[in-house]
Length: 429
Image (tube, helix red, strand yellow):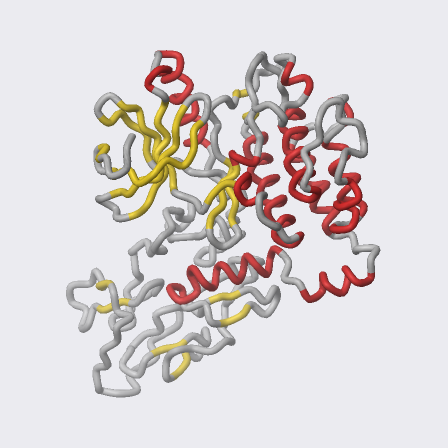
């Protein structure tokens, strides 16, 4: 494919990379007006077997709905080309490792990478090709696992035959012999972690400690070395049994204080992953959701319309933060305008008019379904019409988010929240 070549609704911009099965291009979606990544199989390999491989990748990726796994946008034939479309990231972890990577950012990546692989293992899927090129970086410190092209669904035995799969330098010994398992992905991910923190990629026969061991000891707690060493055991029986167990061990390791007092002091002043996550939420969705208040229990950002804290699940019958309205509801503490007859947020009784004047507001973006309603204007996430008191049946959505709560149907943010802020249902997956 050449630059500016048109492929369906996509215009090719440049080539991003090439693998054994396909080439990946940067392209522009002329309908949606956004940049995307196109994965196109090599024509010389466009056989029934290769198409079947890509079909399996599409099916596997569609099953994995997780914020740290790269979601497919579309997959279809365009003319004679089979094209898989993905969101376009900022680059790969392989490219990022060519520049200095701070310990704070690296540990944030480690947790997200483990969460992605643990989610795949939970769904009985072995990736079989864990390497830096298959982790895609996105704004806000996000990293996502991609390329399930040679992933395998585990049979009842927990093992499968996949001789010849994987990438040289990141393949576990037993996988090279055609017997990959969950522990093989653990080994490959351990190699990626070791390279991230030491700058060196261990090589066969994988004797401990590999080159760069001292550099890791200077950057992180000694327990992290022990954590990585177990993942890199040549005897697969001595490794973590899967990424789920590995993730649990990593989280316990992160809670250990540093033995270096200078690094302990630095850790207190350096934002942890939760702080980075909250900061990214405020930047991306804080304005849209009017998240200007703070939860009294966990101190996470919340808005007055939320009935529950989306971070810790605390019930919010009464709002105690600031409100962008001239007065408050006596029952729920949320803001109301002077010309409203009812509180738009709670089950309270009529509040009555404070002014006969009708006030306009740019925040009115929807309409009440009651045809006899006086004004019928609604603001996002209102639960009741402020003019007639009728319950709002509309399922409010969040822009730039396709997720919704399974119970109430309102928009949620799986990549940030643990609880639906509208009905209190857990969003754990």
